[in-house]
Image 1 (cartoon, rainbow, N blue to C red):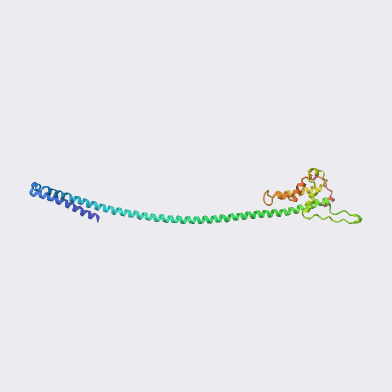
Image 2 (image 1 turned 30 degrees about the vertical axis):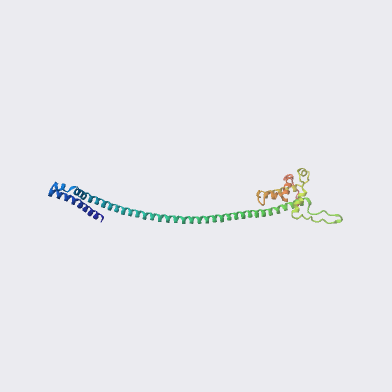
Length: 271
């Protein structure tokens, strides 16, 4: 449609251009140059205007139509670019919304993970506390067994020193069985019996069987103390400070047992 309109406009422009030219040619053919001279300045101006003005008007109209067409094309291009920009804006907005949702989801997962980590940490602390408590319970149970064995060894040591029965008294008074000191008194009785310095211990007369029982006592106590931790609520210093530990330190001053010594069988019953 635009090409058809441009063709018509060009035809009219040519027609408007050729009409003055045809008029001049007709005037020259009919009257010659005298007729052209007889027109005068006003006629010459009208003739020049007739030759130039249609072309100028045609050019103006053609420029206006071209500008209008270009503006319409530019408007369509701008509209298409605007639509494309709107599409990109919507896509970007959707991407931003999706990113926000993913960020919120990641934050929620992070909070859940932190909660799980805190729960796991509390579980680990609880398990560690249970392990410590179990270790303490096991240590207490081992100490009870070790204490029973140490009490048996101390009882044998006490019997070796004081015997089983009292001697017969005057006037035919019969001998009676000597009772063992009860509880911690047994260890304290043996502790009071032993000298406190190596010099006094060197002058202390002691039976070889007592020395062997002392070695057995120290071996049992040392075997237990090696499994006790250095620090904590139940540590080695605590057990060394007990009567059993002080008795172990006191028994360390005794001479080493002579395992080559032959003990008469009838005297071994006291052990």
